[in-house]
Amino acid sequence: MHIDARVPIVFATIADLAPDDALLIDGDADAPEDRIVVRLSPQTGAAHLAGCVCCVPRSAAGSALAGLFLARGRGEIAFFRRVVAISDNPAAIRAAIEDDMLASSWFRIA
Image 1 (cartoon, one colour):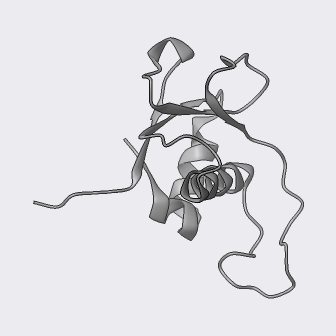
Image 2: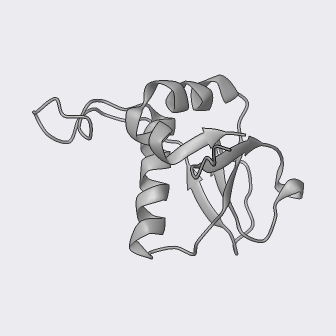
């Protein structure tokens, strides 16, 4: 049996949140104040001139997911077991999981 330890991402609504969920919001939807929330924002490009995996231009979803995972790993936010994505364009989030090597190593579409 294969166990996939990546954090699952589900497309749902705020009403579907479990106590240990984080929120990934595309847009300006309201979010509960007592939740971990990351919002998608436009990206301007690579942080370094080199073309390494961590510095290639990333999508807004890929960048948001990387920031969320790193904050969890550093203990800057509470531990979460699942990400609830709220988006009018779930294809962008799916594409980040398929195309972004770092995001796809940390997250999976459930």
